[in-house]
Image (tube, rainbow, N blue to C red; front, side, top):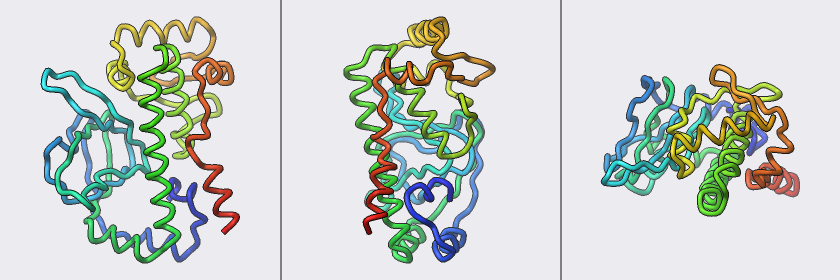
Length: 239
């Protein structure tokens, strides 16, 4: 509900449609495989609590983390048009998800045009994240990549409400961050320590605290306009 409310002005009717969504809760332990590449899909999963990663693995074991899944994110939407997963999903914390049959999800989209638009905008945003990932890994330095990645995660966590005014808890290991950014864990650790020495961030028991968020954004060339939140609000106002 919190995620969708960023993309639509939810009224009582829409809220009732969502709350009547038929599904069952599924619980996964930390470091559990939720989806295996090649697996036949039969459900849409909505993250209620916890973090996960979407990734692909090469034959020699090298892994590319494609994106991070947070509360409110949906995955396996490809089950609506295909039956086999082309990627894997693994939890990085314990995770609770709502499992919804494709037919039930399709019915949700037919009952409310406003919700359909909101879900569509969520997919537009996810595609924007993937485009940023391509540019980040293809053109930015390691320092820029890590700063940009942390700021992007912080903005996404702000939507879920699980943040403070100056930081958020990041349950990702340095290996996961490295696999997301095309770096080695050693290089990732070195850059994080340098960002601390430069007074840009602080790390405290799994938390990332921004000591100079504006400066880090400038260094990382982080422009949150690709989240498209303002564009959606403007379009909604015109309609």
